[in-house]
Image (cartoon, rainbow, N blue to C red; front, side):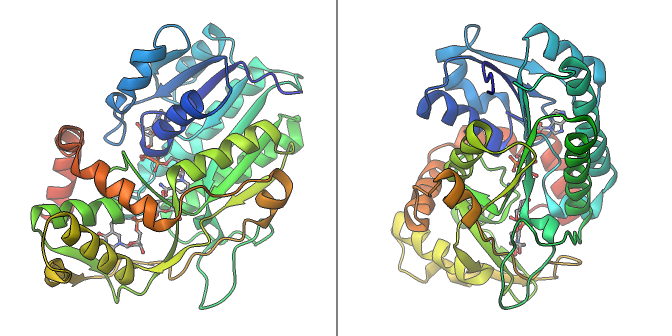
Length: 356
Ligand code: NAD
Ligand code: DAU
């Protein structure tokens, strides 16, 4: 029986992690303590959880400014809060950045995960009421042609520095389960979207650029396909696996919602035109086909029958509603956007894309 009383969430100041923490406090019957352990890189913003901090800070919610690559940071947090469950979101997560500068991806995603596992192994030696849950991606499976799906049994074939670093961490997590008996579960999810997503990923880039009247950079021929899932649906699946998933098992999570990038960008143009009082095709003239991403994976599509059948998970948000919620959020959170787009992010985007 899992204890699930004191949870350490790594990367809880990032996009999915911050939504996860909000989901756990607002949508589940969890009564314990939750510690958000985050380095606050360019992608982390503790302000994303101001509401949770106000409601639960100091009693059930705690923020620790720490680095998963520093063993002392991790050991201290596991001990201080008597952690029985680690839910590991922290990572370098943006494929384009992994192409421009892979070193940090290897360090954080591989060595950081290894470090966490070592700390968990020594803190928990022999216990069976604990859990290390590893959050991973469908990109470890490679790229699909026009047909077919990724299953949990699909052989790994990562093709970018990001996905190779995540694949490595997945293998190390499973090795700790087999070799040392560390209780683990893992999820591999498709593309997320929703509030608080860092505005360097496709959907927020497009919403922000339409709002600012800037060009809409579509890579290559725009026909690459991604399977989109609203972030709360990812998080309800992670919560189901943490509670009921079988030790040592991997569960795929997906939206069953495939879109060519260019079709999605057209939908965003139309939705934004409706919001901003313009005629339907007004923003489509901003679409700009740009140089393709090197090694750009063509198609991702997830089969998540195992999760649905075994744990009874189902999505709550259809794409139309999820996109509306996301657009509304980005149109009414200027302060959050300008904060995260300043500083280190600004420097990186100037250097690699000459602004955007
Ligand atoms: P993100 O880039 O928005 O957030 C990453 C968070 O990790 C940030 O808060 C950052 O400060 C923190 N972090 C980075 N390095 C750290 C370190 N060394 N120590 C502690 N904290 C550190 O990422 P995201 O999009 O929220 O993704 C979260 C996880 O989900 C990642 O593991 C990613 O691989 C996985 N995932 C993402 C998606 C997606 O569509 N975004 C889909 C499937 C899986
Ligand atoms: O599949 C899950 C993965 O989804 C996660 O593991 C990653 O952390 C997450 O970043 C995401 O990776 P992608 O590379 O698929 O996401 P991104 O939003 O960067 O790009 C989505 C698609 O849109 C991809 O085909 C590239 C394209 N694209 C992206 C950007 C930022 C554009 O055409 N123009 C853009 O400006």
